[in-house]
Length: 209
Image 1 (cartoon, helix red, strand yellow):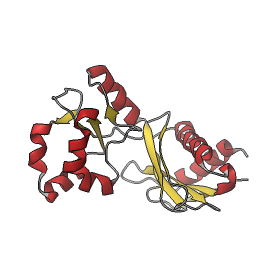
Image 2 (cartoon, helix red, strand yellow):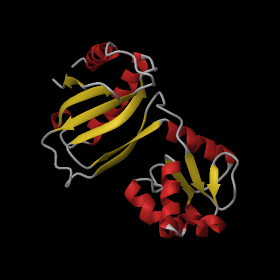
Image 3 (tube, one colour):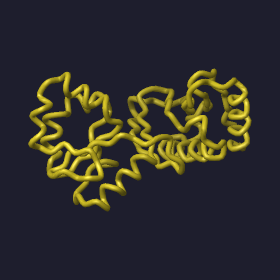
Image 4 (cartoon, helix red, strand yellow):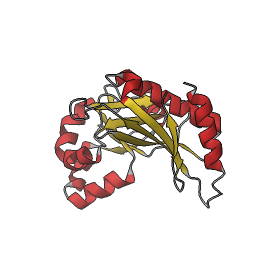
């Protein structure tokens, strides 16, 4: 299967759909088959070569850190109201936490962060040691990663922007696709097809042969 050239053709076709007044997001849709999402709980972070956007990150840390917008335990009481919690969840794309404050984060913020899928995670987001180097490294990793959480037989995620080069979008798609194959029980057999689209276009379907 020559996924690269199929993706290239699909992107060429999408780019003919006319200009929009904004930089459209490129969405990747992976449609699965012979796959039971209840039996196979898949939740992983995939590092992609080209970041889609800068993510807004907040940190639950014991002391203020200049590298990230910090919420210290003393400030937790500001978030006793659900509406304040919801505002916080909307404002940031991603949350990180120092391991030592994690139990208190779970108690104070869990009821809103959990359902939003933004709870700091041991896979990507919990810091044992907090120093500038560790915080910067984690921020870089987060901005270059996408999260795949399979709840149903179709996964949709933002994989790029229209302004990116085709080659960059293709490399991002292939990174995600290969990471998916590693965790699917029957690998490529579990993939029915993949689709790629811009925000305002119909999807282009790519068959997996």
